[in-house]
Amino acid sequence: MPQSAKSVRRKELRARRRAIAAERSAEADAAALARGATDLLDRLRLGPGAVVLSYESVPGEPPTAVLNDALAARGAHVLVPDTLADLDLDWHDLADPAAARLGLDAPGRADLVLAPGLTVGTDGTRMGQGGGCYDKALPRRRTGVPVVVLLHPGELDDTPLPREEHDVPVDAVLTADGLTVLREGPLDR
Image 1 (cartoon, rainbow, N blue to C red):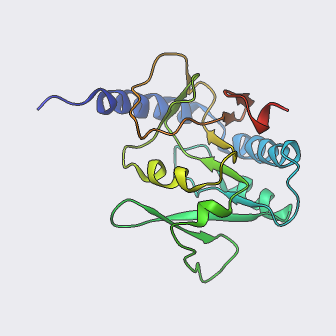
Image 2: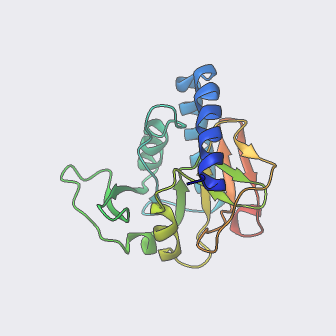
């Protein structure tokens, strides 16, 4: 059975990510992403009590631990996902030591979404790991809540990406080099 265009592309993107990550300073990138994320709070005029959907990065991904701590230090509630058996996402507050599940509808509370991805096209098409978790979760956010994908520098793609009906376009990309706004909306202030 031939591989789908997305599967082939993901394999290429994973190889590119490994090469990029091997050349990056995780510590420097972590600090830069934390500054970028707190700048996003300022840009969106989000103060203490704001809800930010984020995630806990795995090795090779742009690092999120320092970013999540910086958001929490600014008074944001940082919600991170728990992947369910059906590849949907439940969420818990990173500050909650019990990690109490908040439910599938937690994205509806968000004021900002920081999402993972392997790449994003300049048209806002996001390509993730292939499980469809965020394709299920992103439509549950309120209208107008921006989605920003965290990438390594060099992962924003200017080539067309395979796009399907369920793919939710994203608003911007944040790398250690800064923010790239892709669509008109609250981030282009």
